[in-house]
Length: 363
Ligand code: C5P
Image (cartoon, rainbow, N blue to C red; front, side):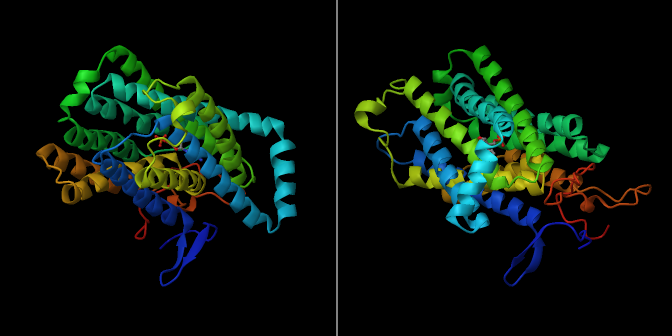
């Protein structure tokens, strides 16, 4: 495979040892695809709708619980868990403060997405929101000192265009969207803010994860604790805004099995994103999530009788092409293959060159 010795690997029964990076990216594609399909399915069901802000709280709280379990597993005992929490969470207030940056940015991002979606046409929102991929690539270069080959830049631009086309093809027919649009310039500002927050929070989180040896699960405890608290604050502040009063009708008003499915999947997805950012990087995460959008749209053709248009095929082809192009070709002058770049577990040997998406087996 041409994979460097110090690339973190994991054993998969029947498949041998595979770099964690690929396992995580593939799992993220499956998870993202599943959650999109679940959300689409939930829209076809009648009944009360759950308040989105309560869903975010549940996701963050579940992520916190799962992260605690994983730290317990790493530490090996309850005493070990307590020691780790005391040392890492309470003993390093500056580190905790650093984590508040992505926590706040992710919160702003998630809220701007909701504002953007209700003040812009869905297609316009999705096209503009894809600029987060370019923001992440630019910040990876400026903040992490990563290098992208010209072909990889072209691939990132193609990916942005391809996903935008797929999104337009699958969301432009909704007449209801236009009826609700009240403040397009507000929506525009919101979607641009969401894209900037996404790019910056992701790359900043990557810098934190790779810049120290602190466990990725400890980082997630910090992130999820902040996320739960801010989420609760938003539930209180927005109470009644969606026509539902959580205090009277209950926190779990409108919950059904699909809502719990989305919560479970998104909580797991949040942890997966952290793994992908740690062992791969933000740009590859963007490719995985974009590819999942294409896969879920393709599956929707069979599951929900989605109509496929020429635009959809074009977008899908452009995305697939970009995935191929992003895999760096061997450079005549460079002696070290790019596959050597991923990230030692101590985070010290941080990559300079963008990591490949597909295994560079022939390099
Ligand atoms: O659009 P983008 O890929 O930037 O979205 C990232 C999402 O992942 C955010 O909504 C954020 O809340 C979530 N996340 C998470 N746990 C992490 C990192 C990100 O839930 N450790």
